[in-house]
Image: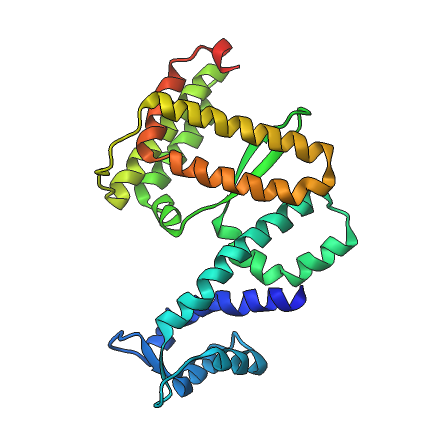
Length: 274
């Protein structure tokens, strides 16, 4: 396990290495190619890798007769799989740490995975839902880099600041609920403008189909939570299943469909919400 986590750490750092200003000095024309010697110098100057790690990464390089290789393809070959698998590992460790906070063996794994956990922390989103035993369960999902960029846009940050101010100063629960819904609608709209998202040419599915699929996904998530409460040994399988469900769930929640759901939500009475 220690070796696997070490591989994750090495490969995840590759993208930061090849996009740094220091690395661009070796490829000023952005051709995407570099010599093994220059690649070695870049890794040594960054001081993110040990000598043994540098030697290992160089051994993974497939260069031509002139010791030149395409570093963009190299990064894609190793960084992307490490990112996909590493994120699943982080979700699993995070879930386990919440369910078994005092387990000494898990603490040892968390110490080994500290670098990987820190790497994914900005990309780790969380949804809290009520389980069958009236217990709050957390479902984790990946926040894309584009979404993080949009969230930092001035328009979105100002909406967030204004929302917090309004909630603090408003009184009743119904007013706060309305403020929250309005904030979500406004934020989605501003994120659309900030990223200049164009309308999709793909025809929308009927609204009834979206409602049925949404209901089905939510039921599936609830059933998986109940199963995880009944059997601790099924927890890892539930995590994998939840991740798959959340992937489908995120695909459904396009900006357009989310606005539609919020508009329907605003029309509900307090009794219907409960």
